[in-house]
Length: 572
Image (cartoon, rainbow, N blue to C red; front, side, top):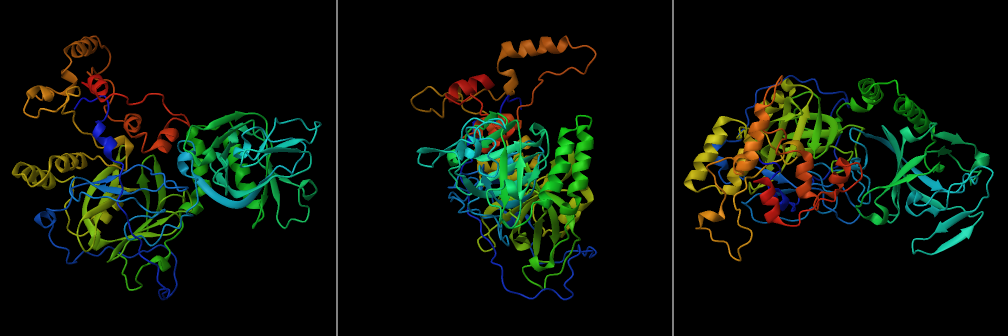
């Protein structure tokens, strides 16, 4: 295939199927109360799950992970769409996790998502805090600071104490002594500090460490707006900060270039841990002598205690479950994000326990689980260039209808295969037998063309969880100008005797001449791939706007799909 971009068919993935949670029951802790990682040896599987093959003929071969949906104040929730078989779909309510999950633990009002951070940045910890303009009256907060908390130009230390407060209804008032207090969550990330106000109409503020000359510092009680406070206050002085989701709208980030002081009062815990960790992270971000590899190694050492949390036995749905694997370190993959954690397989369920890093979003902080009896298919996948990931497809335990899938990337290929051995006997999409079976069903007319194309994509290693390997569809119809579509007219379709890259003879001749002129390197005909995250999000920007903002550093591309006919002509 020689597409320069993915097919517009991918733009139709905007529905989601509801997923359910397994309720947590009051139960006894397993005997011994141990919390260390399981060290049980592998035991061969002998469950009665059928032999696969024709038993699952009515199951969709691949499920579609949709983009992020905007549901009130929630963000980062994902669902699935049963392609071309079940016919119906429904929106996921609230912040529900995966099928049969123990619970997501996500605050229904949270607007923060790791998509708001830089590429490769992780969320570490958060505290309840109050942002205030009265902690230090030496300066005023700049315009747009805290998304409308206070406006006014930042002043020097010997300037007046005047601040201009703006209310949520647009009214304003001037005062030289009034303090403006905004409660919210102060989040420490690997390259920045983020403040998320509880009020969804106020913007989320991100303060990069690279734009702070000094790390966050503690404020003395004499400088505080409340000298009798129980805990402490910190101040941050950046030369640049970003305001996001102001008015609870997904929009390009506002970059504010101004020297501003942000002050935060900690409500339920002292700020010592925050100050210690932020000082170390600030030093790493500001040291220009540190290479990116050394910075990643330093961050890994800092986060190791949070990443190595042992599996909690109290998360088992049934205390009678018998573990079949140890605690395998893995990452739960979603578009542009990876959620590190621990995977354990018992004789009944698959468990994923999130680590204490990036534990915000659809999977939250509590353990998710999926019943082995709900597994309908699996597929070996790549993470980057390493063959060490596994996608598992689930269906309803009663009806058998496909509902969703999860993609897990393990530390080694051996651990991935250990999980594979624990699964019931279900079709594997990357095995030759599945491809031959799908081809036979399509030729016999028992499988739709849409499901067949999804099967081929899955067999080729493509997944809706990975934007770098997103499913692609061929351009079929080229007549977008006629008032009615004539399916019996050959001119309605493109020429299938040639690949897409050879349909335009002038462009093909140009590429051939360029290839013949290549010396000292391996010649190639096409220099760009037809599928990449940027191309995929170009089609899905309306259903996944936050992913586009994340990929383009808070900016939205001005390129829009205005005419399908022009889009088709640009590809073929």
